[in-house]
Each structure stands twice: as C-alpha cells, then as structure tokens.
Length: 439
Image (tube, rainbow, N blue to C red; front, top):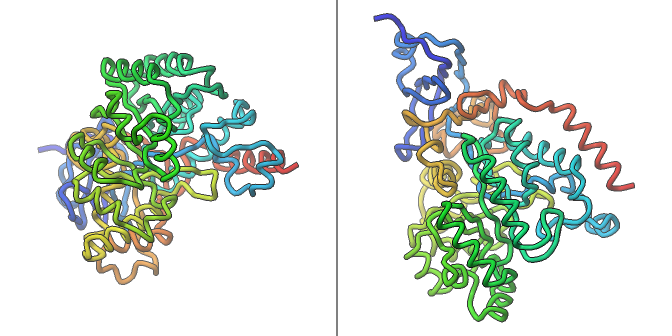
C-alpha cells in the first residue's frame, strides 16, 4: 500500500496528549492534514504510513496542545513596568475599564496588542481571551497573527474610548460579532468588569441577546471583598447572585476571579456549573490561602487559567501560571508533583478550551481536532536526567524554551522565530513608545 500524502508530520521524542489523562507517549508522531490532527501513532509506523509535504524532527522536544489563556489584557501591554508616578504624570490608567486618552490612539493600541500576541506565541499560547477590548483592533490583530482569540467587547454605563453608553457598547459589540461569526479562529463575547455598575435594564437586554444568540459572557465576579460589599450595598445581593437573578448564569458565561466564596455562592455554582477562570500570578491569596480554590475543586467546577493584566508588571507567559497552580494543587490534594503538574497542564489546555467553548476543536492531541500545538525543548542541562517529563516541564518552566507554535497546522513560531509577526519591528516600536511615555 503506497504512503498516504498529508500536509505535515511531527516526529517527536515525547508527546503529552492531555487526553487521556496523565499520559506521555515516547517516540510518537502526529500526522496533520487540512489543519487537523488525523492520527497519533508510533514514529516507526508513521514513517511507513505517511508521506508529508513538510516534516519536523522534534527529537529533543515534548509536543503538547497549545496553551489557552482565558483572561488577559493586551491593549495595555505597552505600559507594563511603568511606575505609578509616571502613570499619574501621563494620565495613564492601566485598568481597561477606565481607559484614558492613550487608549484612543489606534497605533498605540495596535502596537500594544501585537507585542502582547508576540509574547504569548513565544511562550506557548495558541488561544487567548482578550478582556481589555479594543474591539475591531483586537480581532484584526489576532487574525493577522493567526492566533485563536475570544475578544470580549466592553459593557458598561459610562463613556470611554470604546463607547458612549451601554446601548452603544452593545450595538458595537453585536456588530463585531456578526462580522466575525463565521471566522474559524475568532469568537466575540461580552465582557463585564463590574456587575454592580450595570443597570437592571442593561442586564435584561444582555440576557435576552445572550440567550437568543448564544453570546458568551465573561464577567469579573467576587474578585475582592470590597467589590462584593459595594455590589451588596447598591443592589442588595452579592455579584454572583445578581448575575443569577438577571438570568446571566448561562452555560456560556465565564466567571473570572471568584476569590471570595460563601456557602450560597458555592451552592449556586454547583447548580449552574459555570466555568471559572483563575489568574494565579495576580491572586495573592493563592499562595497564602487555597481554601477558596479547594472549594471550587471539590465542587467539580471547570477551572482554567488566565494571565490577567499585562500592565501591572505581570507577564503573559501562561506557563508561570501553570507552575503556581500546580503548587496550589499540591497543597490542596497532598498529591505528587507529577499528578499536580498534569492537573495544572489540563487547566491550561483542555479546561481552557472548554471555558471558551472550543473543547471539541482544541485543547488536546486527538483525531479530528485542530492542530493547535506547541513544541517545548527538553534536552537542555536543566532537564537532565528526565525522570518525569510533565513535572519537569511545569516546575522548570523558565528553563523550557518554546521553539514551535502552530494554530490549525499553520506555523506561528518556527525554531524560535516568529512567522507571522516581525519581532525586530515590534521591539523597536516598544522602545519608541517607551520614550514617548516617559518624556
């Protein structure tokens, strides 16, 4: 029987498929055609069975699904690291909900998003949910870079760079959704920063649209005790209860934060089973108090990871969040490093895909799924001897360079070089903006 012609085959030292759980395959290959995975099989067999247009020899790598960053802010990437006094001098507000005049500058926002996307591609992200929405600019940048994206359009009552009022935000957001409804890499969702800030009539309209159009919602909820108190004082109920009373705890509603939970919150979550996004690098309580996370794990809630705000000296390397999550899981379950590592990696892959409604398409290395994949070099001195690849990958994440990144079989990163973005131009752009912002 003659070999089968396909687009791409990856011959790998190790494959971490995510599904089934806790499995590592040695000397396996992944066959890809039309942007989708058609088979995972031993390399010796793959070399006999397939004839590919392109072949990648990944003999010093572990291949795994691309990381899914379920909550981040790319439009503020260019102000990361700027100190507070300088922010006050320039009138820069790093919170997207209070976007100032600088976020009205189309070139600033576009450059910021592109730099953030480049950083994510180089650190293993193949899909991200953008909360600090610049609307069309966010989607256009993601499309040009070839990365998978959920853009959350802003919904609030007050005027900002992204709209005049709640009606205007909804109109713009739904138009953006219509324009990209058939794009294979793009989803459009509604982003809520402060549930207490929105009027009842606004929430009623959103609930109607969300139910009718299957419009995803991503909402910050129970992030701080102050936000819970403010919501209760204004509306008579806690943030999660208000979302529920307004009919907004729909299957596609994604909850971000959930750092403070009482028994009523947990009971409600257990009944609605909404996915929860945690941002380990921003959640200080994760290292000191894992009780709230333990409650979510015990309730069998789908947990995924977000990098959150890129402006406040955080980075967009989701592997750092994976490591922090793995350490917390070890505290909760008293399990081995290997078990905790596998669980944290699932949070960053298949769980993230499930949160964004893409789990039938991405998040694991399985037949029929899109080839959203990354290759991580694991043959350096930091990884030798390599007893447990998953644990080594997670706990030594800063010593694990991402060398390749594919979305739907298309290369975004090849041997460490960006394929769809010009890294040197982005670096120069960042330097130029840095000079403008401090002068």
